[in-house]
Image (cartoon, rainbow, N blue to C red; front, side):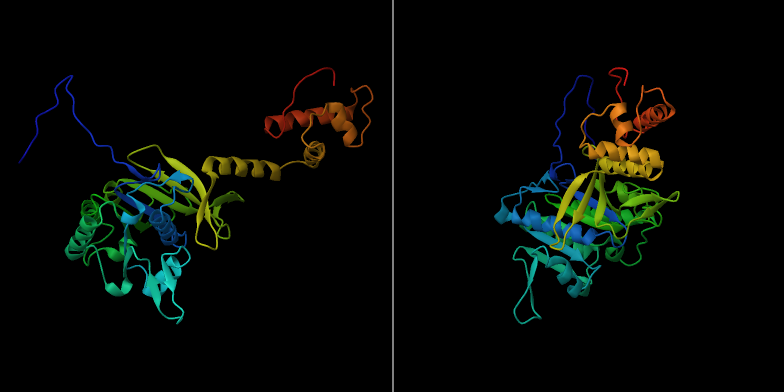
Amino acid sequence: RATSAPILPGGTFEVNPTPWAVDGLFRHGLNLLVGQSGAGKSRLMAALMAAWLRGDQTWLQRELKGPPVADRHALIIGTDQGREDWHQTLTPVGLCTLLPDGMTVQLHDRLSLYAMESGAVLDADTMRMIRRWVDEHPGGMVGVDALATCLPPGVDEDKSSAAGPVHALQDAISGGWGVLTHHTRKGAGKEGNLGVGAGRGSGAIDAAVSRVIGLGLIHKMESGQLLPQESDPRRELLSTKRGGPTVHLIIASDHTGAWDCHGSAEELKRQQRQEQVMEHLTETQREILAALEDNEGKTMTARDVVEALGHDWGDGTGSKPASIRRTMRTLATKKLLVCRKVGTT
């Protein structure tokens, strides 16, 4: 077996850092896109592929990288969907076009598609085809949708052997980059797990890829339970594993198939926590906040608030002014307003 000499103390060695395809999100290698059914994995992959082929400078407000636009080519091994469904997925983002006869669909001139009808799976023949394709299109993008339907016969995703085809795919696309979609295991979204460990089957699958990207529904705490918000068009996107820090975003798509970033997940969590606090406010607390909002965010003294609520301030020592001041301090502890002592009022 070939071995290399050890690196001695003080010695040096060279590295070739793996570049990003989408800065901080998708690496130039094999990326595992994990999500529950209906989360939009195929649509997200198609939108990314379309933006990359067009030569967009950014996607989800992150830099897109690759060879010159004219040299960018894409390949989809999509045995999770038939041609009709791929038409519905690819048309909105401009990767195929319905011709005037209403029956014929024309594919993008730099995209190859193996739909369900092709019967393609991640076996030796398909790996050779992918390797030849990448050799002919250096730096190209390969999308595989989805792992469960593309595993060769006899390979069980629950067994560590499922990582074999994934390793082979990683090797086949060397010199390019790819996205492999995968379904989450039952309950992963409810647990708030979107990243490593969220996918169905063997954990060896996660270990075989460069980056794991989780896509999930927005969840909200209701009556003590974390429930998916199925009517909410927004999604959580979590990119983690090797190559860089974890990135957690809120994204959403529109009727055109385009996706946009709506900020960080931490901003959403902060907003949800504030909404939960607001739901449990007393009537007096709500009245005080309403008075402050009516004042358009300008500073108000305790006296201003008391009088805005229709009470007499007097000398400020009465029960009503004292009660309102206590309530304002409670709101300050909930971080719903800021109190400062500026004098006797």
